Length: 445
Image (tube, rainbow, N blue to C red; front, side, top):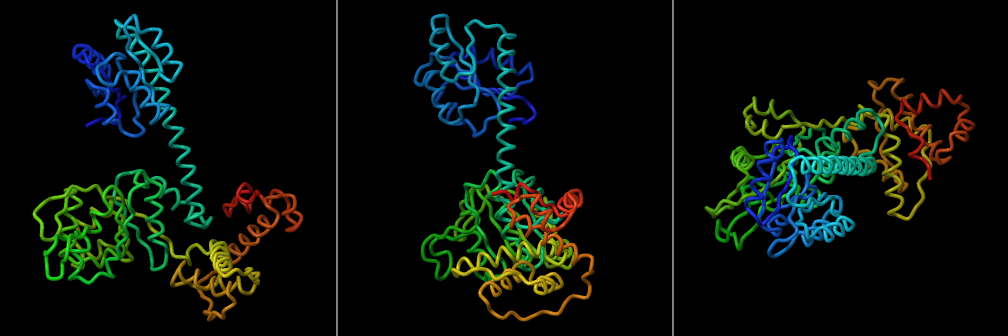
């Protein structure tokens, strides 16, 4: 197994003596080395975003080094490939360098010459991959800003945690109240990670009758039970290579918990009515409202499965704990509903905003979205009583953030215009924007 701490090199040469010599030199110098006799074998096993360097002979039977270079360039133009050439191939190798090869070494070459070229190539590759990682993170960050609205410290932390966990090969447990957006967070974990181009499969454990659960999760063969006509692929198998989202995991029957635990441990499953094991590669993202360990202590959930699912945990704060996000969320959902109906959104009156900020929102974002849709469509919504536990300071903070956001939106990030409208000193506006997580760049046209 390749160690991520060692620099990696792939050596391609049809001469065993050269492969062995180069492998010995590089291994003694602290490299992780893979060797191939044929260029075709190198291409077949070359991983995406390979973090190392390819070292290839030019003249080989079948696909030669120049053809390998062309194939590698087509996949990743920034993957360094160093050519090993005989004396008569030097002009050809120079032309290849001009066409994308990183370097060429004329045989026989010294270990020092090889090491110097490899280390320069590896430094370049490390920089390229780091730039790609930063660009990908920035792209995912922009996507998360659009998918998970809110500038409260809680939401900013949640987005950072999602970016960190998305790239890690670990199961994640999402905890949150009803309507807090657990499935949306699960989809963000999937779309921001290396499994994004594979299936995202969602299953609500509370919505499946216990008698059908095993077939739904593991699939079945034809005739496995009465009514099983034809083979059925289960949710686990369908999610192979991607992510399986198990909502309300606390509702998973105990008998199926043991089978799910085995799948997680062994990465294999058997369809109902079959003795054949199927290898799968699935990331499990589970969601729950109660604490699974407390459920385990009460005998309603397997403790070993709880630990397997909860390698990492994301906690979604209820809406009442991030009231400063309510105005932005309400405007967003109201705008969506109005656009669907071909209508303009009615302005949000101060009294209405005060009511939104004082409500407890037991249904969280789902309830807020429903209220926003009713507002956008001009429907009368029942007015809930204000919550006595909401401090005046918290309501003032949320109202202030909404006023600042609205002014910045109206003036498209023009700070001077905002200062004039709100009659604030520049320093005060800067401090308030920083406290509410508002960036001028977000409002520019």
